[in-house]
Length: 142
Image (cartoon, rainbow, N blue to C red; front, side, top):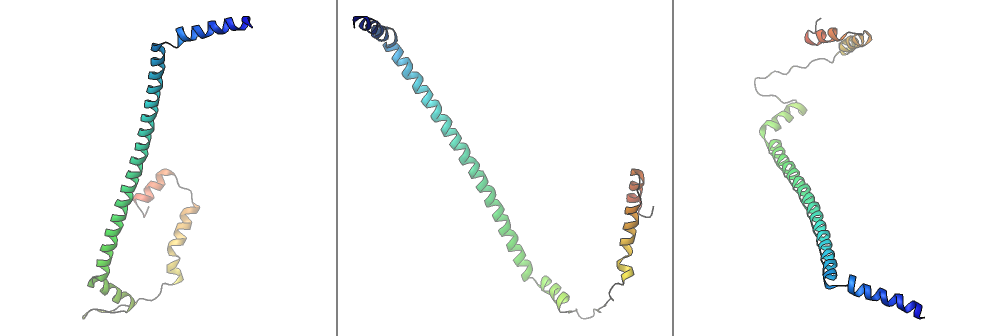
């Protein structure tokens, strides 16, 4: 029993006089305090960052909604205008102003409808060099 008591007493003496001194306790407390403050500061900064990002997104959303609102108001004003009503009357009711003559054109024939399609197929079949493509772009009759 005395063989165990002696090393325990030495250990307790060493702990009290070497490690648990006032300076060491204050040092450990200061380190814990610094770590706690650092952690709290980092958490506050990350929370502020998230809140500022959310605020920026909300501001962008508000700006977008205000632009859409303004656009809708302008469209409503246009739809109420006499100009728009005249366009609709001309389009759907075949109305015309006094002195105007109505020209009714016949439907396009199949030859007229397929005129450009055949030309595009011709162009697609033939392989052109880059120079020829530029010439066709700059000079359509090339």
